[in-house]
Amino acid sequence: MALKSREKMLLLFVSIAIAILGFDQLYYTPRSRKISRLKEEVRATELKLDELTLLTKGVGTVESEITRLEKELQGFEGRTLSAEGFNAFLRHLARESNRLQIRIISLISQEERRLPGEEEKKEPSPYKKVNLQMVLHSSFNSLGTYLKEIEELPFFVTINHFRVEREEKVFPLLKVTLGLTVYLLSPVIKERR
Image 1 (tube, rainbow, N blue to C red):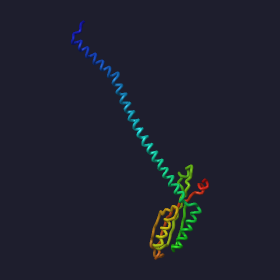
Image 2 (cartoon, one colour):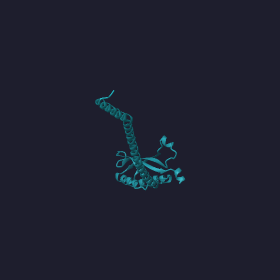
Image 3 (spheres, rainbow, N blue to C red):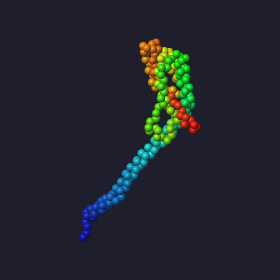
Image 4 (cartoon, rainbow, N blue to C red):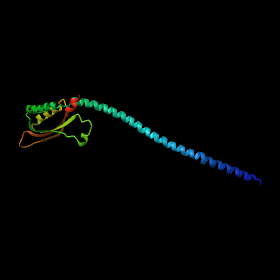
């Protein structure tokens, strides 16, 4: 049976269509899926690379912050009291209050306790925080001078609480409630050095 030219042409188009469909199904579609999967992997890798870049920048920032804090700590060590220095500080407060005619009504010192989680740390803090609660009777001018002298001390003293009241019992003096915090160098750490 001889094929007509129309049938030959149709057969040629069908064979071309089958070849194109075969090429698409066997080669092009799997390759395009592989290419899109690889593009996704590249995007994921770029995201990880960006995260790592941010982390390395963060590490540099953290290192510079650690260096700054170490320098600050060295300065803090020079301005921290020992137990003997704390006693001298209390004597200084008493001397200055006498000089300025300030009456110390009460003085309560209390070492700040550490939190339960802090006690479990391997290395204890080299500092102790001592809170002082003072009640004074003073004139306004003497009080200003007294606070100025506390500020000018060569070590860290923080005023946490300050309250001034006028009471008829002590008039013309003022009743002053003062909360101070002083940092002490721990003797255990001092012995190690």
